[in-house]
Image (cartoon, rainbow, N blue to C red; front, top):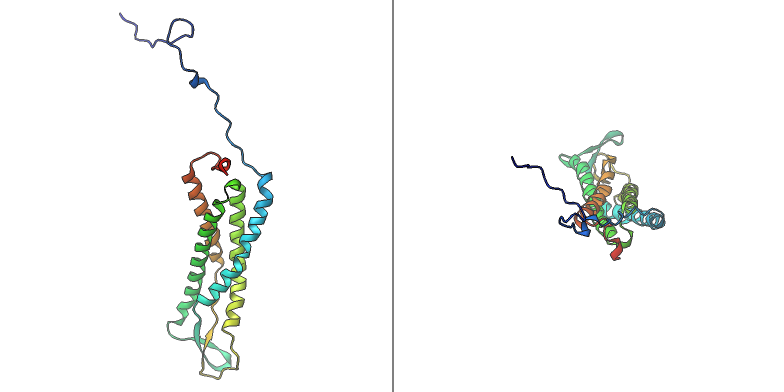
Length: 198
């Protein structure tokens, strides 16, 4: 009866020699660079945070005002369908923040020598700072743009400046940054994200 057990090759015993490539040591995985990327990351966070100023100004010009009628005791009542502009103001800011975040994520990815989680975290925090700054500055710009110069009489229709009534819009810009950067990092496929080619 024939033995069906697998034959094991022994080196030097006349068996087939295994190629040395199988036993070659793999190069060590690249480690996350923290110290060298820390100062550029802080600078990047500040630079991205400043983007909140033009973002707020642009929102103040694009967001539609709400037309209201003046009633007794200074009560302001929106005209029919005008209250929908409250949502429009939020949607415009969220879309502007998402677009800014996507562009920021791609721009940060182009900094090849600094690719990694440290710069990604700085870019996301910078996007959050820019989104918050944009809400504060944008509302101030809108109030100045739609300022009522004279005391309205009862029955007058005036334009009320757009407002941001939900802070959930702050999520859009950092989310866009993380999404763009993460997709590019996943598509890259290199263990060091291509830093050595920089």
